[in-house]
Length: 179
Image 1: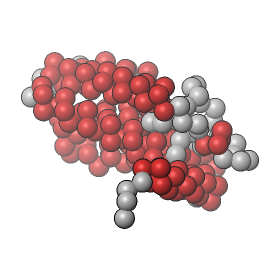
Image 2: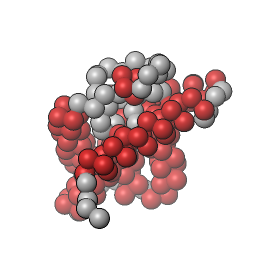
Image 3: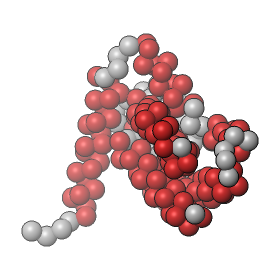
Image 4: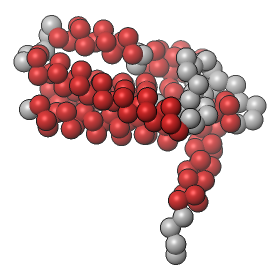
């Protein structure tokens, strides 16, 4: 059996469309979820990450190393995010799925990867490495941010998965480099 990258990509795109429609239209059909996922999404905006960095710098022991890890991992995450977003130019679900109206309008045009998910994972990963007891809450928050991006109709599952994998890989690399 010959490996065919085009077939793999087509399969992923098909599954992405199916899962996005499932999450968007069939799950979480209650006004609570509209509110909850809107808040989750907003909590991973870039300015929230920046404010968290400033706030945490006052409360973290050995904060210079922590801040260095968080700043460097955020910078590299955003560089890779921008390179991939601008080179892949993947359309958002509402641009490629017929009769699909998002619950929120994004500030940019392209979908892959999810920057909000990347921001949530970078911040969570950094905090978990320093304060392991926070892991359950931070993992829950990161998953909620990722789901919110699909629920709001802004990303496909593979977009949020890619954002999470990129951010965790970069965070781990920065952590091992600086410690």
